[in-house]
Image 1 (spheres, one colour):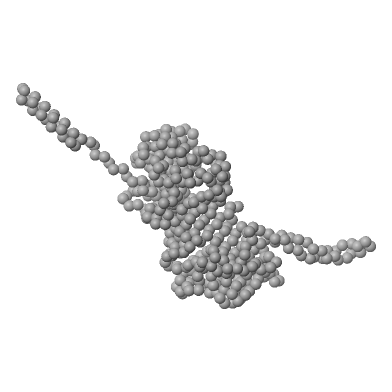
Image 2 (image 1 turned 45 degrees about the vertical axis):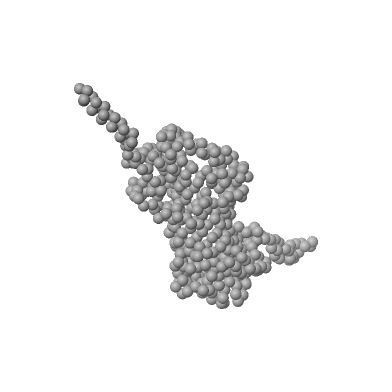
Length: 442
């Protein structure tokens, strides 16, 4: 009896000693990386949300954003902790040209999400569906789908959720999508709080391989620094200076562009003609004739008005009630419109071609491009200038490549800052007014 009891005690001691040296635990499953669930998209991005909000504080104060107290890094961090969101790590965003977009937010726990999802369900029209292991919440009024796993929250806006879910979540593998690999490898803006990346088909149609954008902000708005990789198939490089015309400060749309067209090889020229022909196919513009004579400088200006005086004859009755003709002067507003491009040979053949196709029409000594105002024409040996003002715009040497364009009342600007190794470095300015208009609750 004592021998059996001693043997049992010995076994218990050995078992306890074994557990002390190597505790018995259920093997832990390594959490899957959030990056594996990111969908292939036309535009992808990475945001360090807290740092981004801190950087934008001055902008929100200057523009007196009414809800800025809810957009501080402190408030967002406290709210995120309440619901288990890990905003101290990167938040990922994505969008497509067809109009859908979404975000993937890492979680440090999914247990706290239930109260938030229940509240969303109570205050909105929500249909929840079980797909595999995931419960999908569909906010039908807003085209929003939400679901989560243990380590991430997935929010999607658009009409293509089944496709996104199938490709990004249901068939997830070990490989990360190529477009996300491009973002993560980011050699251009590795330390920025917001970085966007695209290698969409639209870029490739313009001879571009991929593009990076990173964010800066000041009181006036957001500034996106950009780096565009030019496709090797079109070695089409921008020059750092060239002939230009002076623009009015009131002009809403301007182009000041200087590119290298002189040294293009015949295959490269053929590719350039093909791509530009796609852009102008609606009006059947004679691109071949234009490229043959163009020496690389192109300026365009639209916007603003100026007053011109013109004489006219009016019949009036004199003091004897006899009709008499009186010369008078009247003033009218003429839209400001200018177009200039440099040439290395006569442009007469191109002008004749435009007239034949009806793209350009002539009325006496003035011309119209489709629906443009009446324009005067000055033809020089090295330059063609159309203008609506009384005198031709003044020429000068420009040291910038810049596009300013007004769309739906908002002024956007893109400027090429430098060139290196088939990369174009530039900047895009987005006014704060446009941002506030697009986010109504602010």
